[in-house]
Amino acid sequence: MSQGIKLWDGTRWVQKNDAARIWNGNSWQKAKVKLWTAQGEGFRTVSETQHQKTWEATWTQGYWGNGEAKPNYRLSVANRVMQGRYGAPWSLEWEGGIQGGMIGFDDNDIRNSLRDSAIEKVELYLHSQHWWYYAGGTAIIGCHNARGWQGRFQEINYNVAQQRYYNRDEGHWITLPNWVGDNFRDNRLAGITTHANSSDAWYYGYFHGTNDGWKKPKLRITYRK
Image (cartoon, rainbow, N blue to C red; front, top):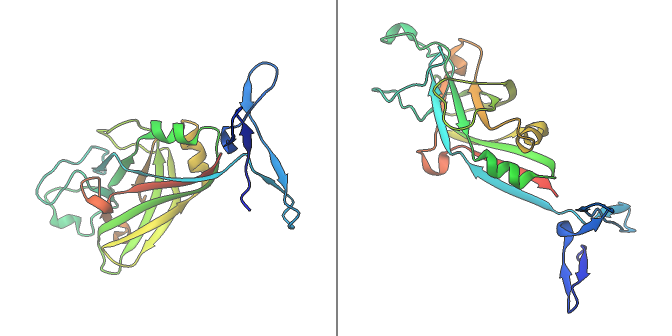
């Protein structure tokens, strides 16, 4: 039997669930209704429902070790999400340093969707395009709070999650801490970074960006409201 909240509108019963409101004497507040299930789990909150939403990246950018945005130049593709130091820097025209990547989303829509919600799971889809080694590498995930495309690399949270890759062309849904979703909801984060504070070639690679169809980065958040 389904559980939820129905209110009589004068002609029929209407399913309300998370839309139900209660007057506190000054304003209408979201109603929190619990139902005793008598099935071992005790009270269940039926005024909240679980939601899951996925946002595709709206912009991506790779950056040189000095923080400057990479241009489209020969083998350099600006849209790629970079990470790490090239394994043979002596073979290049110049030293690129420890590179990084930034990923942006429609953070305004994320905030609107997550308003008044409890975050249950946060996942990032990141599809590698290349690693220095055929055996793959490790992605180091961080966060930024920059709105819109940036000409210089920015990061406010380093190494919030790591993911091992075993092939050069490989995609993963990477679980991030729930506080990342909290901070997106509360206007303290706007995007994701890739940045390994190491010159070890194990961390050198790049990931597909917004120009790469289904392989572009995505953010998936499961929440209850």
